[in-house]
Image 1 (cartoon, helix red, strand yellow):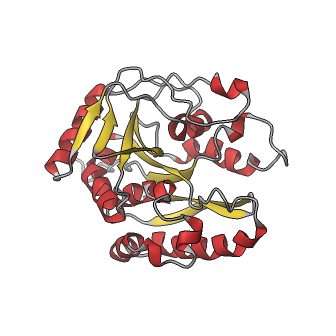
Image 2 (tube, rainbow, N blue to C red):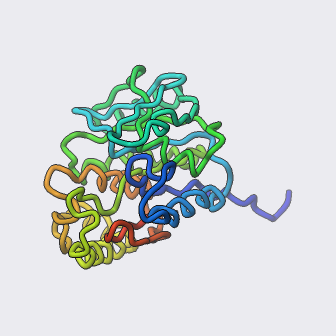
Length: 274
């Protein structure tokens, strides 16, 4: 018998990524390079993984439900839930398959954790899923399950959702929170919000990079951060809450900022947990 122990495969990380503004990566913009750095970041993300995921669980800012809902269709259609963009952006394709068995597993895991949930065989994939994944995994050959937010937008509850799903990481399932670290529609393009977004981003980075216990405490109380409600107005924090599920699934893993950029006069960042 060899005295060399087999190396445990590195588990999948969890991500919180920005998905941009509507179909911004697939259209002309003014200035033309406004979203280029974010697009390049997303295009390079797959190369940071230890191996190709067997499946993806995508928590999107664009699906809120009165209980946790999970897409369970075999081939969900795309939902073009953005408005006023060029006609060609409503013809974008991302034919990734669903994963009905994984959806059922997720419902069972959440139920075991005392979190009400249900499979939804009719729900399609919204743009919080297919816009970033077209850049990250353009082949669209990895099965995807989309997970809703609870419409309470309770950060503690969404941390618990992540904790309930942590074991999926050891099954080579990649858990992604898709949102925006700054999301105030009235503030984009206003240079007065630059310093506000900077202060919030500094706080958020410090929270993510804290010890697991401190990270959970700070994220639960994110409203106490400087400029919190200027960056995410009341009852409109759905673009931040996917971060909580990614952080919850991190368990005792290390969090760090892996991308930041100035977009439309505000600071936008991405985080990973390993």
